[in-house]
Image 1: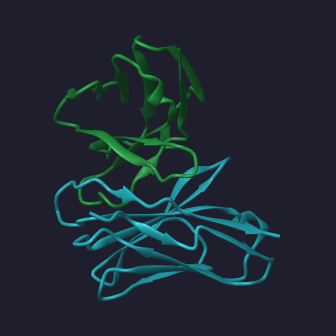
Image 2 (image 1 turned 120 degrees about the horizontal axis):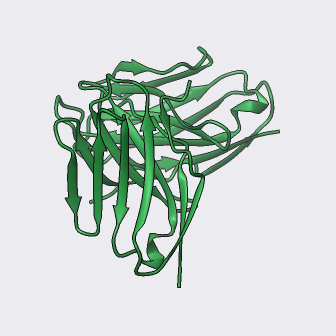
Image 3 (image 1 turned 90 degrees about the horizontal axis):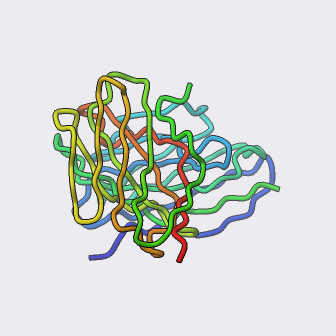
Length: 114
Length: 113
């Protein structure tokens, strides 16, 4: 069974640009969550999409947005990039129902802002 | 406000001995707790979980203990193996928000020969 796939694995951007990251969940998983990992803050929840709707949101500015397609694939967009956005962005998928199915993570996209 | 805390950034244990990783939380609304393991350049891998209605859950070499009154949980690995060397994250969520995990900052475990 294929795992969670994130593309690209590495990305270099400059301040002020925007970026789009992609995540393909495990087949059958309807929930996709995004996390930001930085050395100082650890893993922080960005948002979750379920059935093409944002279901949960973390405490990040509006420059961070996302969407989910009908096949459950998800994209995350960051506009007006800042140096502090340099981080590992992780996507996780789960069945997403009312039960407590654990999230399965991809290997992340390493974003560097110059 | 760090709602999930792992106060030990690193831990070194000899192969064959027990590894004990600790985690504290402050949000009393959390009722599910998980442990993830992360190797460099890979995403976190789910290890084991426990719900607040239990105080212990075991899966092979891994056991998680939950002390709700102390808002404390721990992960025991017995016996420790060199392949267990990784960063371990404790995470928690409230009922109905399983896809919104709050993570600790991680503990780097090194298992030495």
